[in-house]
Amino acid sequence: MLSNSLAELDRRHLVHPVSSFRGHEARGVRLLQSARGAVVTDAEGRELIDGFAGLWCVNAGYGHESVVEAAAAQMRQLPYATGYFDLGAEAPIRLAAELAERAPGDLDHVYFCLGGSDAVDSTIRFIRYYWHSRGKPRRDQFISVGQGYHGSASGGAGLTALPVFHEGFGLPYDWQHKISSHYIYRNPVGQDPQAIIDASLAELRAKLAEIGEDRVAAFYVEPIQGSGGVLVPPQGWIKAMRDLCAEHEILFVADEVITGFGRTGPLFACEDEGIVPDLMTVAKGLTSGYVPMGAVFMRNHVYETIAEGAGAKAVGHGFTYSAHPVSSAVALEVLALYEGGLFENGRRMGARLMEGLAGLRDHPLVGDVRGRGMLAAVELVTDKHNKTPLPAALDPANRLFDRAWEQGLIVRSFAQGILGYAPPLCCTADEIDAIVERSRKVLDLTLEDPEIREVLRG
Ligand code: PLP
Image (cartoon, rainbow, N blue to C red; front, side, top):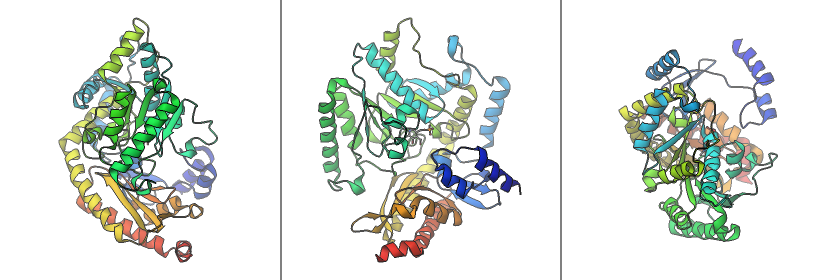
């Protein structure tokens, strides 16, 4: 009863993020009631394994009492403190110091915000200010990568390369440019890593020539592209792009909103690539989704240039909730949990997940399996040879999500017919195995689906 009336209230009043308003009205809400570890319980009492950690964010898993305690203690003592007027609180200062100590290279300066979207938009503002401070305000053009996602605040949504974030929103802006994704499985130059790296370098060089290299402010990458379908670049791709940017003094921004905090193994995925970006964005795993928070890391030279440029003037960027003490207290506790064993468990479970999913390659509908650590994808096709995607008219995203839900599994299902995985790092071996087994069942049921069979026959 309760859930029925909530469903009705939801339909009438709650605007859901990145959803078809009409589609959601028709389908209604799936109410979640509670969660513990890697398992969520819905309003009917059904338990499901959360193979996507909420929205790739609950890296530590649900139900950590120590996190609840940390938030409650901070709320009791000092629920809010602004960073304006030279004020501050202990938790954000400690958090900035702990993170700076662990971040690659001299990414020593941390600006805290509310999530990934405003972290990305903050980088755009800091970068504009940086070039202004260097007396080069015409360095105002930004480049990002096809299939990329950088949030849905206006600046980042324009850097994003997924049409649904542009159409009808007047995006991208004319100062935002793209080069093609490295998308190994569907790359026009084939799957050879060096050929893909060479093609991307050539494209970036051509883009610099087209825009004017003295006009380019920054280049944005995700160490692994998330919302574009979990696309892992060839080994060395990030480093090659980073080196080319350094050659032309272009700031290199690593958007680690998904890949940070143990998702791919190390604390930050950049560590695996052996690079130090000029700026880095994080969110999600920073607080493991218990409360909102994001952050921008800046290397010393970026911070110093901005500081010198501003002199005694205020750098006019900041929010009421910048460096929120409660979010900071949560992030500190989550970091302690990660380092107290969750990162280690995540690395072991990540290897198990990748091995298990690789076992699905023999399935008639599976075209590609890819990922690193606890971040993975299975791409479905109706014809392995031609790599034909599931027809968009069959709405693969909702179809696959429904099949998985029926099996007691939550996964991301992308519009192109890709299953995405980002389980909490606390998963047990049994839970990882169940994710893989239930995924196979989802594939089998999809294969038996009369409308899919029709396509396969055609
Ligand atoms: N950047 C990347 C790489 C992301 O994946 C996301 C969200 O998924 C964002 C930015 C935006 O973060 P948020 O949804 O916290 O605003």
